[in-house]
Length: 209
Image (cartoon, rainbow, N blue to C red; front, side, top):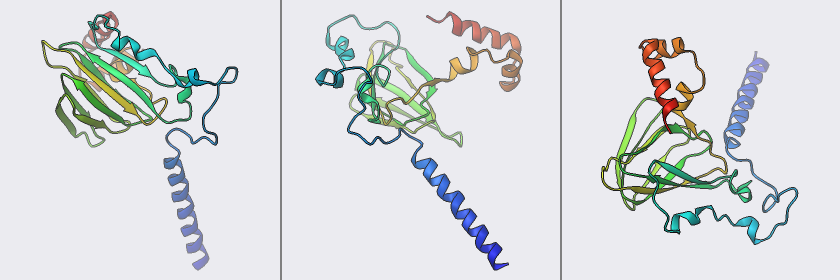
């Protein structure tokens, strides 16, 4: 009996240890070198430089729809293994960044100019919202559904978001639900509505520029 109890305790400890290890490695993996060089390329100062944000200071016309400029692993290969990425969010008046999630990182947003209505929903379906003024910071916890909305009908807003992953990922909730081919009946039953309404939502999303 004592042997069986000891075995059960050992098994429990083993399971807990595995779970802790999995949690610890859930983000970007650690690397064993200073950086990850490209397989076929020269490593110099240019490799560690990204010029994609120069358009923000070039005096060009502001966007007419919500726009995101990203510096992630896809746009900036030097970020591979560095567990960091960046995005600039541009909100013309009365525009929104629709509800979405980042499965691999929290998001730390800094509002550079304008005002934003922001919020997220936790796993207990609690909604946390705030009206941000220029200079404010707001954190969206990892993996939770969140949004940003410029409710000002006259002025634009600009924000900078930092992520603790080179590839935080973005899962758009409207696109995931209504633009991936999920059966209309499944969605109608889930939202307690009819198929015609679901089809209108899909058509509206497809027509969005």
